[in-house]
Image 1 (tube, rainbow, N blue to C red):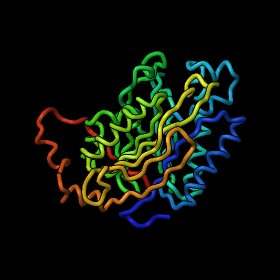
Image 2: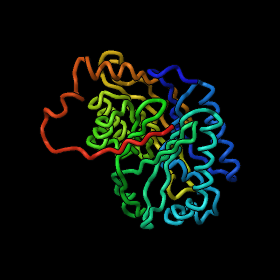
Image 3: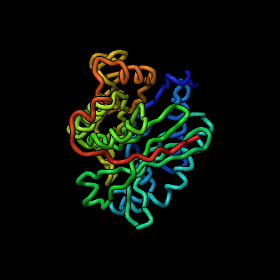
Image 4: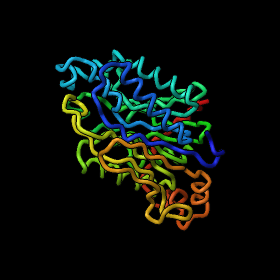
Length: 302
């Protein structure tokens, strides 16, 4: 249920990592989450980074507990899992950012990819640009690209996966391509990691005069070699300016528990602060000097 072109409702799924008994059990749980979010009037449902690795719990203990084997095994169920999200987007009439997963590219190397599904059947993919230390070694996941902005019925949005939201030029490239809000799915195993991503998300909202939505995995999964510990809380962050809370915090979820945080994004308020805010950080960005930004590719999703 969309409230019009200027106001959209987003459901941020703090995904509690559980070991699924089967693919069917996992699919039913995901369907319940999407249906519950749609029942709140959500136009967009956002899942966290690496949430797809929950499916490795279907495999035998030795595979689930070994990161290298788990990363290889997820590819055997990923097409069906992604198809499930595409079907849910169509049936529930919502946009869905599915949980990201490591996917092998044409060169055989793994990249961390988040896919956005629209109710009309559109699909877009954003690869994580900058890898963390553990993704580089021992996981062997490499950085991807380009930076994309998705032109949807909800407006233009970007996806800055976890560590990427800590780098200002990535978000700036999205803003320059017209993004009004940025989704930041995350997966962090310490409170320090959660707060690094949260700080980055708030900074990008300030610089880009936009709304950034952080969405983490949560909970303990001792059976998993990839998602054993997950700390964080979902949050919606905007600029500290007219039409937004003074703190810039639009909504904040509870720490480390299974929860769906729902909030509205006012696109008209974003446009107002960019043209007539107390400060004009987007317009004044070039005044700081320095080099250029990475280019963005705009992808139309119907």
